Each structure stands twice: as C-alpha cells, then as structure tokens.
Length: 391
Ligand SMILES: *[C@@H]1O[C@H](CO)[C@@H](O)[C@H](O)[C@H]1NC(C)=O
Ligand SMILES: *[C@@H]1O[C@H](CO)[C@@H](O)[C@H](O)[C@H]1NC(C)=O
Ligand SMILES: *[C@@H]1O[C@H](CO)[C@@H](O)[C@H](O)[C@H]1NC(C)=O
Ligand SMILES: *[C@@H]1O[C@H](CO)[C@@H](O)[C@H](O)[C@H]1NC(C)=O
Ligand SMILES: *[C@@H]1O[C@H](CO)[C@@H](O)[C@H](O)[C@H]1NC(C)=O
Picture 1 (cartoon, helix red, strand yellow):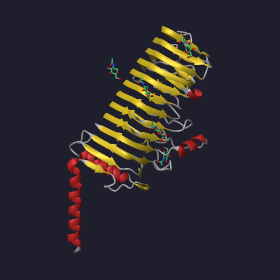
Picture 2: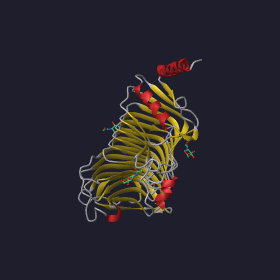
Picture 3: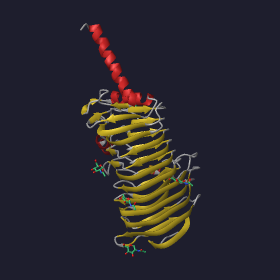
Picture 4: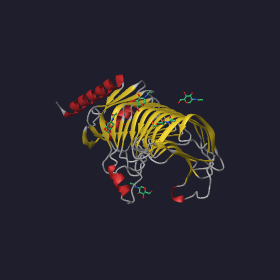
C-alpha cells in the first residue's frame, strides 16, 4: 500500500476507534497509552482520559486496569460537560519516588471545580517515605504534596479507595459540598510528619464512613468553614486523633457547625476527640458537635479542648483565643487513657466554653479512674461518669 493511503486508512481507523469509545463514554487509560509497568510515565494518558470524559455530554467512565501506573502531578479540571464521571480503578497509581519531582505543587492529584465525580477502588501510593526521612533528618525539605485533593467541587463519592504513604495529607476537601467517603483505607507510618488522613475545610455535607485511618498526624482534621460533617464507624490509630482545628489562626474566620462523630475507635493515638484553637484574637467559633460511642485504647488525651495552642510561642504568647466554643456533647465514651488526665477542657479566658454535656463517660488510667481538668468551661454532667467531672 502506498504511504499516503496507508496514513489515511490508519487515521480513519483511529478516528473510528476514538468515536467507538465515545459512544458509551468509557475511556480505558491503557488504550490511551498508559503502561502498568510502574516505570512508564502515564500522566498524559490519565489527562487525555479525563479530557475525553469531561467533554462527554453524558455519564462517562475512566477505567484503570490492574497494574502499577506512574503518574506525576496532575490536575483534573472542570467544569465538565459530563455531570457524572466515574473512575473505576483496579490498579495502583504511584507518585514519582523522588519527592522533589512534584516541585512546590500542593497536590499530587487534584480535582478542581468538578461536579459528580465518583471513584471506586484503587490504591494511591504517594511514596512519601523519602520526604519523611528528609524531614526527620532536620534538613530543609519541600513541604510535600497532598495525595488527593478536591477543590471547589460538589457531589463527590469515593468508595473502597486506599491511600498509602502520602507525602503530606492523604485526602483533602476544600470548598466542597456533598461528599461521601466510604471504606477508605489510609495508611502511613505513625512517625510521619503532617500525613493527616482526611482534611476538610470550607465544606458542607461531608460524610466519612466505615473507614480505617492509620497515620502520623490527625486521623481527620476539621478546618474553618466546615458544616454538617458526619464521621461514622471509623478506626483511627496510630495518629493524632480527630481534631476540630487548629482554628482561630486569623481574625476573620468562618465557624465550624454541626459535626457528628459516631462509633469511632481510637487506638494508641495522641488525642481522641479534640478541639483546638490558637491563643490569638479571632471571630471563629465551634457549635453543635456530638462525639458519641467512642472507644479509647491507650489514648494520651481522650477528650481535650485546647484553646491555648501556640506552637514555638510565635505570634501568640500572652494572648487569648477569640474562638467561641458552645454546645459540645460527649456521650458514651469509654476505654483507657495513656495519661492521668483523660479529660481536659482548657478554654479561653475571654470566651469560656459553654453548653458542654458529658454523659456516660468512663475512662481509666492504669486500671484506676483517670482525672479531669477544667479551665473556663461550663456545662452539664449526666449519668455515671468516671473520672469525676470538673465542670
Ligand atoms: C520551590 O519554592 C522555592 C521558594 O519559593 C523556590 O526557591 C524553589 O525553586 C521552588 N522549587 C521548585 C522545584 O519549583
Ligand atoms: C489497608 O491498607 C493496608 C496497607 O496497604 C493493609 O495492610 C490493610 O490490610 C488494608 N485494610 C483494609 C481493611 O483494606
Ligand atoms: C447536621 O448535619 C447532618 C449531616 O451530617 C444533617 O443531616 C442535619 O440536617 C444537620 N442539622 C442541621 C440542624 O442542619
Ligand atoms: C462501629 O465501627 C466499626 C468499624 O470501626 C464497625 O465494625 C462496627 O460494626 C460499628 N458498630 C456499629 C454499631 O455500627
Ligand atoms: C468504668 O469501667 C471500669 C473498667 O471497665 C469499671 O470497673 C467501672 O465500674 C466503670 N465505671 C462506671 C462508672 O461505669
């Protein structure tokens, strides 16, 4: 066959092939050139799959077959024509092993302004150990990237995803509405720096369900502007526990309202149920929080409100927190504390905590009732309580 005819024929076949995929809106990253050998840079294929799915006017699917795919820093940007894009991932996606490869990017994989994205399955390996070692050695190191971020996005569902060894946070949601995470498995070493499991801020209606989070920093960290958050049936540990805060770093700050944390087991964590604010002026607040049915196993601070956070004593010594904390309920919290003080309410002198309800709490230290300490905190005690409550 002469070359021009051949080129035309091949082009035609290729067009037909692209069209045949587009008919049902399914895009397989391997068909688009990705290689599951763990070595070949497959970033472009993932981005082409995204571009095609995003531009498809109906529900679309991106399929990642079994295999290990090396993907560099990538942004999946909307808005899209498709209002339902599903990632079905049977394989592993790995970040470059050189922690300098992503430069100063904040995210390894970031979704931005998307609506209706679902992820089923998959393992994301952030290859963070090199960066943790760098940080632990005291050298000057990059901050690192968050493994998976959703920014200004709505109607997100993530089911059965595993995130391993993130450089920085594992999953982060910023400016999102209606997010459901289920059966998420997060794992990083207990001594890794800033590897928060899931971070939520400026977001509403986020649910984190039936998940397992072992990490070096907060299990879930809850930032300003979080409303209607539900965390249920989660295991945390090792790590720093579930933390509302740090809040009140700046003066003008949105509050945290309506958070429910239900049936969580904390094992060998630094904190259990924590609320933390900087000792600095702020208009921030926390309101309507329920911690219910928690099991503490060897937790250093099972129940703690700390409004005097001032790391390295920079920019805050001598100041008091402006963050107002009201209507916080602790109900059916039991287990063992790793320190004598199992309940600590250290609230702001200017804005005492109010409406704290402690009900059916039983925390022991070395088989003895633990202790509680209160500063500027007021509330109600209901039912059988150990330690005796200082409220
Ligand atoms: C990262 O940011 C620092 C400070 O802004 C800059 O010096 C450095 O060149 C940046 N590195 C990369 C890889 O962009
Ligand atoms: C979670 O991931 C870790 C690390 O890959 C694995 O050891 C563990 O079995 C997983 N757990 C579940 C419930 O999938
Ligand atoms: C609190 O959040 C839950 C979702 O976690 C929602 O169902 C409920 O309606 C919210 N309550 C109020 C008063 O907004
Ligand atoms: C509590 O959460 C655990 C997972 O951490 C789950 O196995 C258990 O079934 C949950 N219990 C209830 C009553 O939902
Ligand atoms: C608290 O738990 C301990 C150990 O399980 C038990 O001996 C004690 O009676 C419990 N106290 C209350 C008030 O339920």
